[in-house]
Image (cartoon, rainbow, N blue to C red; front, side, top):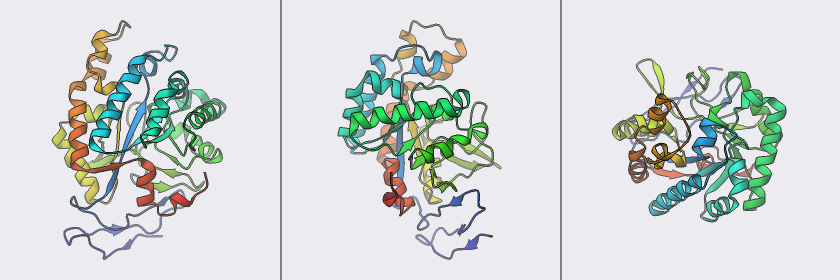
Amino acid sequence: MPCQTSTRRGSGRFHRRICLAAPSRYVLIPPAQVFHPADNLLHALTVDVEDWPQSTLDHSLPITERAVRNTYRLLELFGRHGVRGTFFVLGLLAEKFPRLVADIAAEGHEVASHGYSHRAVFHIGPEGFVDELKRSVQLLEDITGQPVRGYRAPDFSITARSLWALDLLAQHGLQYDSSIFPLKLRRYGIAGFPRGIHRRPNGLVEVPLSTVSWAGRRWPVAGGGYFRLYPYALTRLAVARLQAEGQPAIVYVHPYEVDPAELRELAWPMSFRTRVTQGLNRRFVAGRLGRLLNDFRFGPIADVLRQSVPEHGRQPV
């Protein structure tokens, strides 16, 4: 069914065509109105809570106290700005440091699952995926006393070869997933995947990572290495552009990215390329993130979905 043209306008500066129906593979959820940068759109602030050596160098390494200290640094930063976010917590970390998870929840943040071991979804297969999902969700719910509604795959590893994971998430009671980059990159992403928040046929809401279109292609923005690589002015421009489109930005950060000394102090061997790319501009992350929190409104994914998907809050867990 073709898109219909909407005549609604925001401030008079912007208008757009809104897709009211889409192919049966998914249903696009159009914004309630057309936003411009002065409007009060809520963007998603997310944290992937993991320990860099264990998640990146060797999954058999123990989770260290350093990850805890860095997460508290983010909690302090968010507290200073009066914002809450979604913390996708790795099961192994929650198991070793349950007090951290309890403190995250106690400060009003949403706690969601980042899997258990940080092994890629397409490497562990459906059976391993379900085992890790159930284990991590049970851990987090036991610690916080709150239902876990969301999931993000380690290394965004729900790709074209592991889309089966979305059905398994729905089958096991998850309400949303935020694992997919809607463009193909070397290690992850799906070319042509919908950019906006949308509902899958199985009822699961997909919250893709943010991209902007420029010069005929999509570009990843507002998180991780891209947040470190791009100058802040470019990130701000990208988020403002998403806001003008009525699309919430999905911002993500890792606790280790506010720790510029980590790679200098680690004893584990690593390649020069890894040391450079993983350490790039860490010293700027806390300051840039603070500026972003000043310039736009942020909240947890659950609140963003209530803004974008009005019936989301009434769905059973």
